[in-house]
Length: 99
Image (cartoon, rainbow, N blue to C red; front, side, top):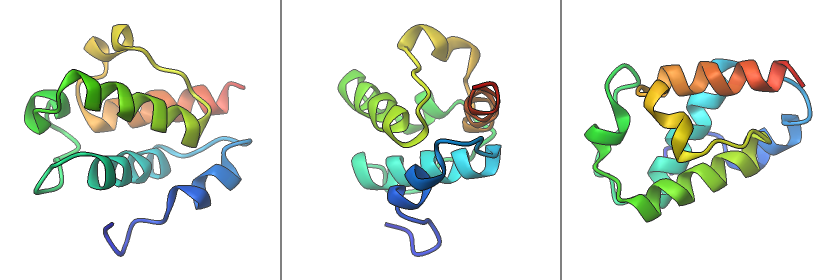
């Protein structure tokens, strides 16, 4: 885990309220760092699925862990419109603010 990325438990404690896009981006980076075989951090402004080359099982794991950390359920059908980690983070943050 990257030393600057807080553990998911820190975000779970806040997940009953709205999360900022920056918090969601930190969660995404943490999940990718801890649960995939990526050797480097993904630029939040590039197509993260293509760039990371994660397989379909890793993608499903990512979505489940993200849901557990944020309370927002995303499916593979949501992903075509959420191509960058910044787009994904803003979308999830907006959904946490709307609950």
